[in-house]
Amino acid sequence: MSTAPPQTEPPLTKKDFTAPNEVRWCPGCGDYAILNAIQKVFPELGVPRENFVVVSGIGCSSRFPYYMNTYGFHTIHGRGPTVATGVKVANPDLSVWLITGDGDGLSIGGNHLLHILRRNPNINILLFNNRVYGLTKGQYSPTSEVGMKTKSTPMGSVDHPINPIQFAIGAEASFIARTVDTDPKHMIEIFRAAHAHQGTSFIEIFQNCVIYNNHVWEEIYGREARAEQILYLEEGKPLIYGSERNKGIRLNGLKPEVVTLGEGGVSEDDLVVHDSGTDNPLYTTLLSQLVHPDFPTPSGIFHAQERPTYEGAIEEQIQSATEAKGPGDLQSLLKGAGSWVVE
Image 1 (cartoon, rainbow, N blue to C red):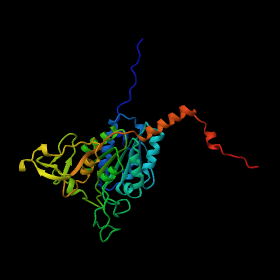
Image 2: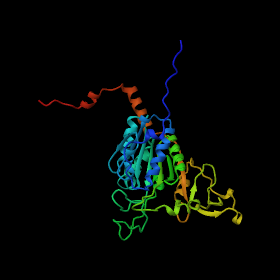
Image 3: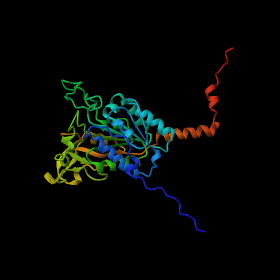
Image 4: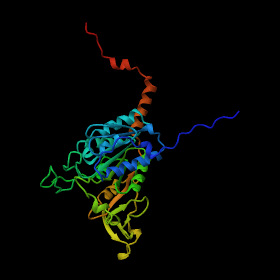
């Protein structure tokens, strides 16, 4: 008697994660490229489609859940980390992705972002950084450069900008990375690594706002500038960049400096070797301080070091309490020990 072969589900594709909703970003917005990269990488992760959850706050980037054919929450301004943490604790099997922007995540949501990073739930955070408030029509944001003229700073911003990578370092995030919206291959590589990391993954994405801050990153990742201005971080390899791969970063005491290989006897042995797993935060901080125009801009994984996750610690507490006191009774808990009857 023959038996029918087991039925197998067809592999997921990008189409499975494409929502029927019309994508309503401005033509040319960098958000399209990020959306495309996410829809490409999700089918590769081995996670059932029903186990993905996309959470966002408020802003142009925060329309993301509407364009993903997954479960999602469009929350209130800056509070996405709180909802995402609750989702993960309630169901640790879910793959949770939090979408935020430089305004949503680092202004009104700065406190929430800090705490999700230190708590370390297994959540992936994508922070779109275009250095401006786009949804509310062009005010300066926490990452805007000093002197930037906007509708809310007509004489130029006097605020010192936040460096998102340094913010994540200060919160002791367990995974910190950067990528850019014009490099889809690199974006996908970083998203894969973030998913594989057990803990909170923080990814800053340089993203262009074509209406209110067009060409904001042109001097760093424009076609003519990219080879000389982006330093791709490769694990275990020296910090080398340039169109001819002849420039690098070495330390002069505790200060980084740009050198040219072959000049003055400089060789690869003199350069800093990338180590994202180091326990020493000084190295990651050094990388975060490589900023344009004095240095090339690092892109890749700055730091990756696994430590216990928040939801894992909560689950251990629940199991410990259950073993010690039994499964518990909800009605008894609601009534409490100090209830009384008024006659």
